[in-house]
Amino acid sequence: MKLPNDEKAVVSETKITGYLLSIKHREGRSKAEFFTQLGFTADAWEELVSALLRHVADNEVAKVEDSPFGKRYIVEGELFGSGGRKAIIRSVWFVETGEDIPRFVTAYPLQRRI
Figure 1: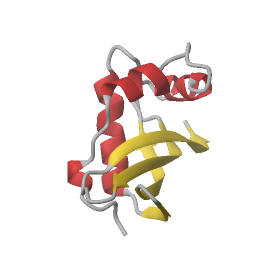
Figure 2: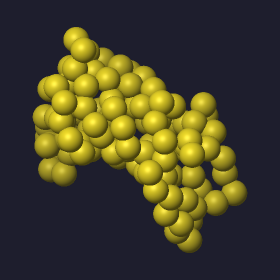
Figure 3: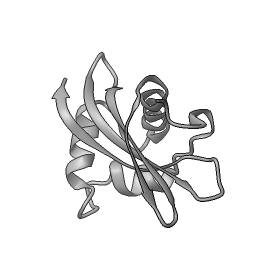
């Protein structure tokens, strides 16, 4: 199963620059180091957004979790960085009850292939 309405998926700039690519963020620091190794930078944060949207379009949903507020979708598969670098990641997306727009929550490595 693919992420429902993946063509409507939203990834906020703040989530990328303030978390996934921020070495200053206490919880996001290790993720920033990982994504930087794939060639992504905060100055060109849109490249990571594009890669995440491609990741979610190309890969299947591995798990769906229900919550009182909506559904959490977990997608696992390759993420392509620059210069042919790639890695296996898990991305998490959330669709609020009554909505149809998947919103990016987080991503992290499962297995490196750089």
